[in-house]
Length: 327
Image 1 (tube, rainbow, N blue to C red):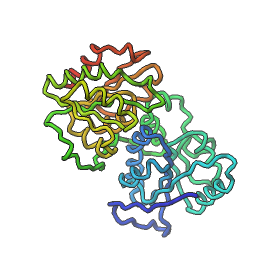
Image 2: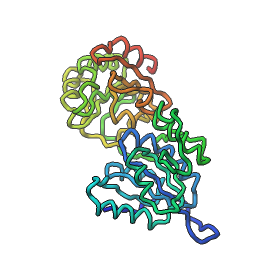
Image 3: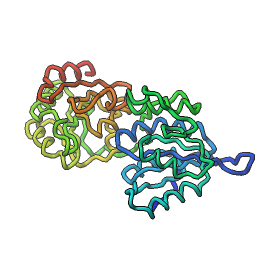
Image 4: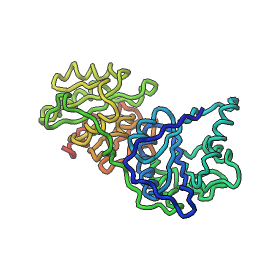
């Protein structure tokens, strides 16, 4: 029930400690997309801190490819997140955790589920960096959750002597974008959101106005999103012939590569913005009252957030001024 995959890495050959037992380190990060992206910088710092260790990451299926391509681990375990009544799966997970002789666990999920995983370890338990009661390096500070997930991870890892943690710029994410028809100057437009969160969307007609403004400045608007968001991207494209519509054509890797050379990105509080912001792309992100940008904004060096209670109250003037600073 716990599947494992050996990663192909570019790491140096691991040397053995004097006791002939290679250090075994476990990182736990189950999801979601934005949180996983913000945990990549801490994962890189853990890899640097344990250069000769065998590092395993416990994650979920949607993030298997990201974990593998990052090269921050040597092995991937997929967690099925068993229900409380699935005792066979719990037993399998417990056996897996206890047979690997982990010496240290970094809990980057830090919720009730992973705190319970701490209890699955037999005593003496490995060193545990996280919030679980009984952890050797336990972060009980209220400051941990006041900001973004990245900042909380940095604070927690500091308890274990890991400092100077940086945002992962995602340079290891590769993709071919040569056939997309990009111009020299383009801006990424992310007008959608998960279907269950329509209140996070700014209106298509206002995005259309912004796209036409960009074209007047010699900047090509590039619309990205999933097929479930095609209604809004199609509406924009129909009123803005100069826009490039890549809806349903971009992987996470494509988005990262596109972001590196974009003039800017404009979008709602949605997953792709968490890929775009860390690359250094100037990003303007629109928030309603339903999420807090202090805690939930994408992490990046050039991120600007705008917030109103209702997205209908987000004026064209506010957004135009924000993107004008990046142009």
